[in-house]
Image (cartoon, rainbow, N blue to C red; front, side, top):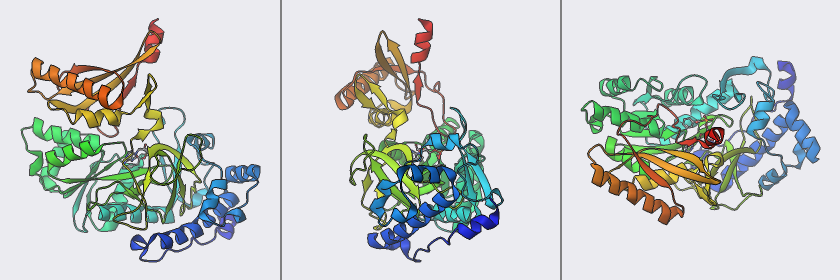
Length: 445
Ligand code: DLL
């Protein structure tokens, strides 16, 4: 398709009132409906997959008259992006695509996403809005330790920080010793990185005999992986900062789909003037607010890659807005449904273990989960580091206490094993907690 052809069909994106961030729910919903209608038409007219799916379901863009009509629309999955690899879902000609990002693609083909100039502009605005929500002020220095490259974290955060009027230190992830040095020398007020990497950085300060509370840091904006309020408390205490949660995924935009207010710290507000969230139950029917289910998101302002009803696989619930009354919040994400371990009928997430481990004296948040098979039964071992001062007796008591809490609170028996201090892998970005060794056991048999 030529650029002219798309320009002829792409209608102008409906504007939102200038005060939309502080507007009430009705005003946000009015913007959502107009933009949903725009998105559905844009996808239908410019993306063959959507046209086929709509035709198969007997739906046209004219059928979207209310926000509830979204339930008539088909879902989009990661598989759809893979099948249309690399650019098959783009709704504009390539000449209008200014940037590409992609997932690492460790399992199967990478998923590729694209942005027009307008998309990049709105993304920078939304990341800047997310930083403001976290209390960041123009003129502050921002140590950006999200990975730069095809991952959306680094560059997404970078543009947003510049948009807000901050000074960006684009260090990217890794080289932890250097991170410690530059945090001291450049005096950043804000750090952007995954929560597990912030823990690695705090440890690195201590390993060098430095106090992680002595930096100029005031705020951390952490996301890209699940983390608990207990981990937040740990990071805030160890670094003497406020830590806010930021949510996002490449298929929908990247970091900044939603973000937490430093005032309320009660889960990310989703920026609903740009995204329409739903929560689905196991039967894929929408659930009312406050119920736990899979988060599904429709983009409302994406030109290059409009996405309708994307199944994120992230489990959470929608709650009324607080700091931003017109926009709903998501509760801190428990995990993706792919990370859920079903152990003898009980659902367990790595975040459950993180929460409990941080409650027990003498344990650290450094742990991995090993899933093995004993006979026909799945078996889970928590391999965890104790604080270095813990001797055999105090360390052993801590391990037993964790095992008891898992049994009492989650309702399932797991083994808990001590790992030598410093021996478990440290995060430089997204941390891998779960090691599924069941196939290896099968190979051994
Ligand atoms: O992780 C985008 C991002 C970068 C978000 C930096 C925040 C900060 P993906 O690599 O596509 O994009 O991974 C998206 O990460 O579906 C969730 O499972 C998980 N995730 C992202 N943010 C959070 C969060 C980036 N705040 C996937 N809490 C999502 C829990 C999160 N999980």
